[in-house]
Length: 403
Image 1 (tube, rainbow, N blue to C red):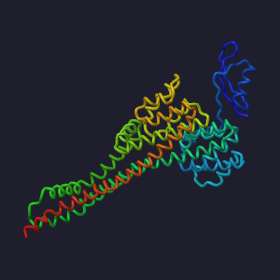
Image 2 (cartoon, helix red, strand yellow; image 1 turned 90 degrees about the vertical axis):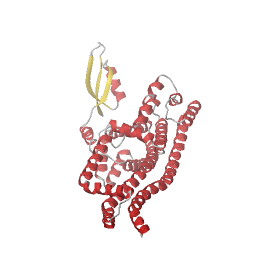
Image 3 (cartoon, rainbow, N blue to C red; image 1 turned 45 degrees about the horizontal axis):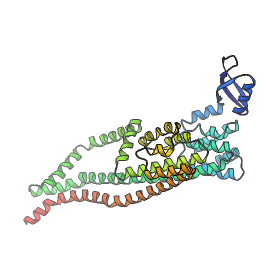
Image 4 (cartoon, rainbow, N blue to C red; image 1 turned 120 degrees about the vertical axis):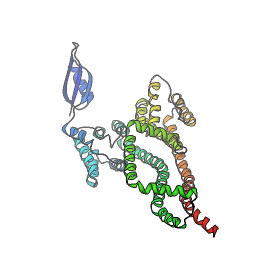
């Protein structure tokens, strides 16, 4: 038995409210009808365990790898005929991570008090997003929780694979550029002063490139105690700004406009949108709710904003393909495939094919970009270091020519 709070109208038109215990919301509605009350709002009263879970949701956060592994473990246990509550207890006994153990303990206690599995998961939105909770809810309602967990596990693995590819594509050039800055800085601080002492003894006028390098060395050496905290402070303030909604929006726009990387981010977002929508539709979630959940799973604010207007147009009767054709970033080929899927009644299968295609496209683009960036970055690093060395050797070549 669970306790429900309700608000409604009596036969006389008066507003009434209260709480009752019932096995389900449908049973509560039947009880209220017998009492002559038409319910307008019904909410499940929170137990002490649920209140504790609501507090813990601000503290506990699982990684995507932990959530994916947990999903696979529960799916195997449930498909083997083990009840859900017992399966959660078995997984809890095996894990060593404190955060995961705390979450599983709270989920077990919440389920044992009469709540659904999806309700227990919803107390941890940092670990289990809306998509995850919606699919588990659909699985529980249809009696096919093990199949839904299997589908969720596959979805999480595909999403993590695409995310890692995109992240790797953006991190590689950043790491090489940082290494180049570090090498050049060390040369200017440690190597160039030794060359300068040797060149001063020759008493010759230095070439312009050599003088520029020496001036840079002087500036860096004389101001290093100011530059280091300034750079650290600038990086810190930049990171804080990028964590704000305004900063994230600026960063998202920059990423979309970058050559190569912008195309990867765009196609990765299209793949994730189609994969998420396909998974939700196959789970029986209606199109409107599925689109709203899909929007929250995208990592780019610019694309999220473009998707946000889709739901309103579909509500007035427009097809998904027609609406997506007006979204500038959405590829025409994907729109055509989705339109065909709607016309043939196979939208979920067509969305899966679109997601597969663009995930493969992202993988090819990342591989191609990595191969193209390697020689470019090596030329940049070698050119910067070599340019400094040549500038310092110019006076030596000049002296050798004079001799």
